[in-house]
Amino acid sequence: MKKFKPRPGFTVLAHRLALDAHATTDRRLHSHAGAARAAYNWAVAYVTAVWWQRKAEQSYGVGEDELTEWRSWSLPSLRKAFNQDKRTNPRFADWWEENSKEAYNTGLANASAAFDNYSKSKSGKRKGRKMGIPRFKSKRKAPLTCRFTTGTIRIEPDGRHVTLPRIGTVRLHEDAGHLVALVDAGHLRILSATVRLDRGRWFVSLQVEQKHQLVKVARPGAAVGIDLGIKSLAVLADSDGVLAVEPNPGHLDGAHKQLRRASRIVSRRQGPDRSTGQQASKRWEKANQARNKIHHRVANLRADTLHKMTTRLASTYGTIVVEDLNVAGMGRNRRLSRRVADAAFGEIRRQLTYKTRRHGTRLIVADRFFPSSKTCSRCGVVKAKLPLSMRLFECDNCGLVIDRDANAGHNLLALATRTTGTGVAGDLDLAKAESKPRGADHKTRTTRPRREPGRGGQVAQSPAPGPGKKRETVAQLALW
Image (cartoon, rainbow, N blue to C red; front, side, top):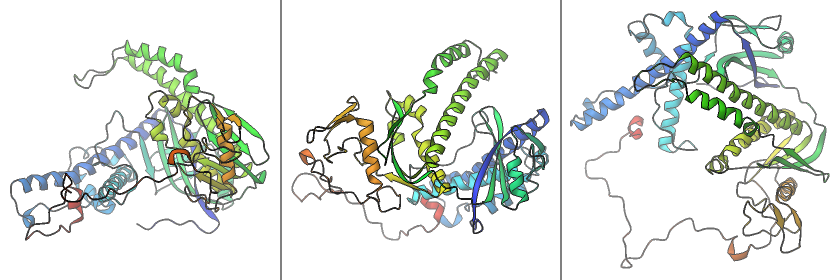
């Protein structure tokens, strides 16, 4: 599928608007989201059924030419097969006409993307953790969402309503008159709309092609180094020598007592039990809704704090330096996982990435193994060890005594003058530092030498293919 390219001078953005849906609209939105989930599960069953069938036939000794043919998971193939099956399949025959075709296309497109990710991950073409075979989406846990790409998608002239295909006109929670003005001026064009139930409320995300308007930052020649942490959310060291601290509000810790009490109430009610088919009582649903309300409030407060901080930084400094933190690894620490998740380091990095691009400024990401806390910001000597319990950095060479977070902020700021300007992690032209004690600056050997014969142990070798065996050429066979 050809990738969409915006016009020169335009960029692709998304505007997320809250909806005030009444009972009828809420039922339609739930129906469309459920239809998308049902189409996704149909596609997973449609493709994987042949996989298991071929595997069973091979175990019976069926020849390669007589095996069941593969089923393609491309979006056009899934769409064609679904349109032929939906009229006769008893699962869809009675109600598929109630929803827009975009609802089913959403599920089929997600399934096609899931199989593509699995295939690329299996063959090593996809970065990140290994992806498994796509699984069915549970009605109880799957997020309710649906994407519209065709049909009537517009913001009404009053700026308080949005119109979606088959859903109709829905009232917006906030005024979107500024978007209407951009549409009338020809500076904005709606490409698609995605509705999603998030934190107990329906939202619509409008993907638009918008004219890029560069906003000049307050201090384009200034740089700032940001050291993220738990005790303080961020320590900011700018090029003017000003050291500022962003306190960590700890919204989750502040609501921990309320959550504990609400969870205790929920545990004392009669909840659902899938093993016995027991339905949740009304009192359990009411108590669970009260608990979810606390979680939603914490999430909203966290998002508000992060957006205000990142917007202020992106609109003030011309260069921002942050660390490439291993947030997933930090979350495995059972003592710090809850506070690491509450601080949302990855979300801060994500927001700074697109906000600096919007302002035309530079974001430099330090390498993950850059010793920002262990390096002396005055003389450049690197300590061998610096445990988290030591909150003060004491240099053994020059005698500098400084807070470890402030020291890390100054070291990150120094990277702004030593980078090539690409802003890519690892693309740094660092000054040569002092040698680390005990050979800490030596690289670890990446390859293990082969053992010589007769020195205990043998080198394992993969057996050569037997005669007559040919390499499989079908792409799907590599998935097994």
